[in-house]
Length: 289
Image 1 (cartoon, helix red, strand yellow):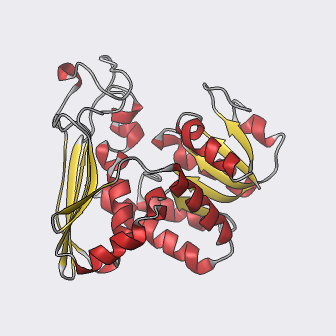
Image 2: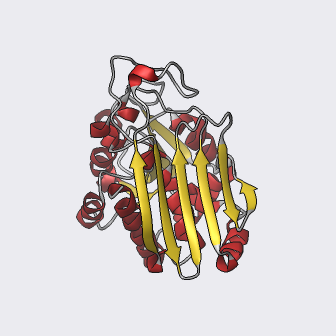
Image 3: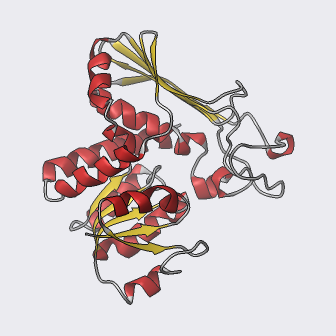
């Protein structure tokens, strides 16, 4: 298996060791960080095909890179939040019918998911929460510029929570009863962050807190994402009727299982139809926040 990573920030930290542990041949591209190639053009002069591709670059580059590599790739994993909207995602799949596309949904491959599905089926209220104490990513950078990131925490953390929701229940029958996204902070009042640095000359015009409430048959789901709660600690958990399970960051083994199962199902049209429907639904939720 030959696998390509485009973007060696998160790509280097997570995907490179995961793919190597799966004994894939790993090729890398990055315009700044150390990599095998500094451009996709140079890459394609050497290689003609990749079994899998992981795109881990800034949000605004996802679609153009996916289109550039589609004819050379079997499976393309696009990091959340996918592309700018559901219409563009649908058109991407339509334009390249011989390539499989999937928004990364790594948390669906945690070992605890089966247990959570069982608990979810009988719970009256399920809360899925990712609240950081002080983790606005690189304030003033592309992360906090709506034109480049498409949104803030709603495009960064909320897709993970929606991914949990779609695997825990029959998401198609749910009704959204409440949704909210808002920007509570601005660059002038930020003095520090636990993630990166602050560019006071940059832009901050995105939401830093959002929530969605969905009623699904007899269960109420409350999804909460927050970059800067100022609670003194980070909270990442799922709660079933008051019984909380801490989640923490996604373990490496879940990424490995996602890639293994996706490769195994390369020719399974039913699997890819499910991925498409979930990816479209997640896009639609976040583009409406």
